Length: 538
Ligand code: NAP
Image 1 (cartoon, protein in one colour):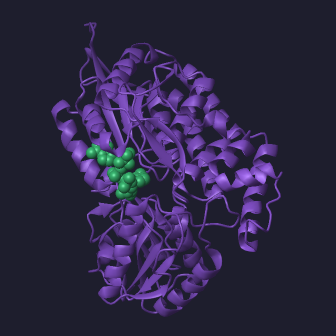
Image 2: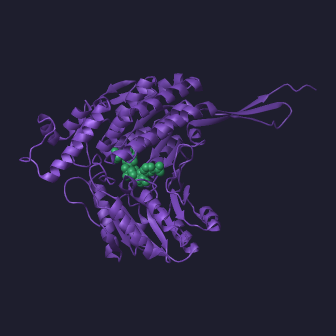
Image 3: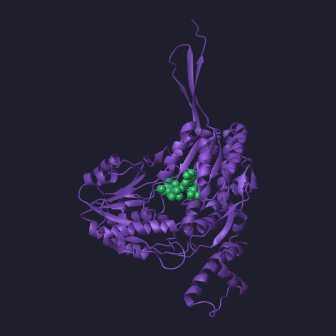
């Protein structure tokens, strides 16, 4: 089944299927033959592992435990950014569909909120186990609809599932407080209760993990959910619903509505303004986050905003340059530079600047490979869509126009798909757009600095405050700089800084609230002070 699925998503493989895997030289060049046979081998490996992707690829949204169409009957297509091919279609829902899902979630909340933490824990645990069991199918959907390399997609599924595991554990630990009384005739306690229906809007770059990081916390707290994934990547969200159902999540507890970009705004407005929703959790750009915040004002909703970043990556003269480069390769080029915590401004101290840039150029050349995420060895999948390619291209061109020099790459990759070659720019200044805007692509922009104070001043001179990184072998400097950086996350000689065990959240315009860690569940809980007046014995 897995083979057939892959075959159907790649028309050229239909020919190889007819010929039982042996394409003819008459039809294909040697390079194309090798490539296609490699993909076929991959498909066969998936089939031999018992994988059935088709069972997880849905063409309906999921509301009240049912697979449903849009009331209008409209649909939109989901495409593969590696080749532009259509993968399938899903319902193009509108505001009225959102209202129906909200009412379902509100009705279901009345029962779900009273379930025991242990019951919710068991369900989340089963959901986690099912995600692990089906990680290859789920990862395949990510690579197909989002484009990241298959190993990265598998990594995302592990990360995504771990949030369900983490919250299956946290649900039994939502302790309140018994506080010392302020008077002899009073007793005071603080309890935490589920806040209500939680709405979620998620981006395309982590189509699975951005959802479980929110849904896991919401369900653990006792909330029900209405979620809307991005237009580009609805399939991963719907696949999670299939496993939620298998895990025993009751109908109406998790509702996923899908829509085209055109309907994102009216649905977002409904989620923000509907009084039956108690909480909005959004991950995406600062611009949309600010809009949603303003729309939530009338109903004074609790909000979590995980917004954009402009991460500084600082390399001090004392740093181990090789270690810093390996860290940068992860912080910059993971998911082809399309993560909110990607290194955006690479600040290198003057003593090691030239050495760093030369060594980085070699590593980019030798370690990065651009292509379809299923092709073995590929590290750089496509950008999500044509708009993203144009944005990255404009940033590179404007930097070059202002004096930056291209050391590696600098242009699109020829051929189909939304590919941009990994790019290294030197002589970038803080005034250039590439240093001020979130690049969201595979462009490493290197800026030279002289002193520690200058590096900190540059790093903090942004309205963003999500992630930051620095490399040093000076222990005093590591304390000084980590405390001075105005960011919600700091990596010190380390680039892999996120995990379910710790908090994820931004300062300044990068967001409100935090996800994961021991505080993440509080985003879905309301605190209640209960003060007892008691008869005090004279
Ligand atoms: P985006 O344009 O803000 O979109 C994010 C989500 O919001 C998508 O589902 C999008 O739907 C939806 N949306 C867009 N306009 C909307 C509106 N008016 N009302 C309601 N929903 C709306 O962000 P993006 O460019 O796709 O994603 C990249 C951004 O996300 C970057 O800035 C990145 O830093 C940020 N991000 C942050 C984190 C974090 O945890 N801090 C994690 C990942 C990404 P459509 O896609 O269908 O338009």
